Structures are given as structure tokens and as C-alpha cells.
Length: 200
Picture 1 (cartoon, rainbow, N blue to C red):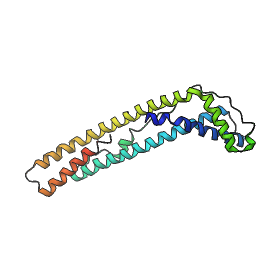
Picture 2 (cartoon, rainbow, N blue to C red; picture 1 turned 90 degrees about the vertical axis):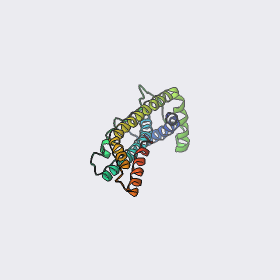
Picture 3 (spheres, helix red, strand yellow; picture 1 turned 60 degrees about the vertical axis):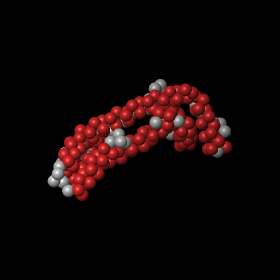
Picture 4 (tube, rainbow, N blue to C red; picture 1 turned 45 degrees about the vertical axis):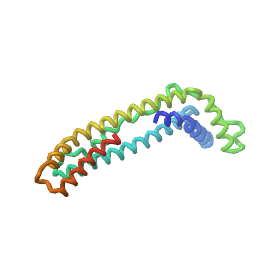
């Protein structure tokens, strides 16, 4: 994940160049620096939203596994999807610090947006230097630590509810009064609870 985030720098530069062209064409208020900062933040936020979406899907899968097992055993102490989703909060943001630029519209922009965009892109690449590399590297480390923390909390919540169901299933599987077919279903349920742990 850290490598993928560091690779966002050229994406952010290209998007910032496009945003600057729009900024000049529309005569928007504000500064060029603000337009570039907004573009970089949008790229970082879009990446973060994809990771958050994956965590939301995982939260649903874990909650479904617990709820299905609880229903099969006649219990009602399964964690809800909202309990897992509550763990996905305070998403990290990229920190650009005192990021300032001095860039003006290319004199040859009348030749077309494509040429102007390439020119601005090259200038931004040079002007930002190592600052964006440092910002995205720091963002990557911060985001990875946050994801690991969320996954750890999900595992703790899942295990706290699942262990009771595991123990109950083991007792019932070992009971002599349980039929062969029901024992097989219980074994599958027990395996399903364990399998849901793997993504976490």
C-alpha cells in the first residue's frame, strides 16, 4: 500500500495541471497554490475512499458471518454491521504543510489545452521537487498504520463475539444426541467462523 500511495505523485501532478488550466480558463477566484493543493488533496482522498470502501465490505462480511451463526444457534448476541463500521473513522489526510507555488499561465496556452497542460505539468514537477514525495510517503505510512489499527479492532470485536459461538458449536458437535447431518452443518458453521478471520 505504501508503494501505491507514493506512486500517486505523478497522478497528483497531472491532475493539478488540469485543475490549473480550468482555474485560469474559468477565471476562478483564489490562488494557483490553492488550486494545486485542492487537486493533490482530491487525489489522496480518492485513494483513501477506495480503501475505506474495501473496509466497509469487510465489515459487512464479518457481521453477516456472526449473525448467520447466531441465528443458527438461536442466539442474539451478534455484532451488527454498524458496530464494525463505527471502527472505520478519522480517515488520515495528506499533510502538505506550507506548500506554496508561483506558477503563471503559459504564454503559449493559445496553442491548445493539451500543450498548455504538458507545460504546466513539467513546471509543477520541477517546482514541487521532493515536497510531494515526502508528503505522499508520510501519508502512505500514516494510512497504512491506520488501516492496521482498524483491522486489529475488527479482529478483536469479531473474536469477542465469535468465541462464544465456537465454544457452543464444539460442545454441540461433541454431543452424542446430535444427528450426523446436523453435526456436519455445525462443522461447516465452525469452519465459516474461522474463515472470516483470515481477511482481518
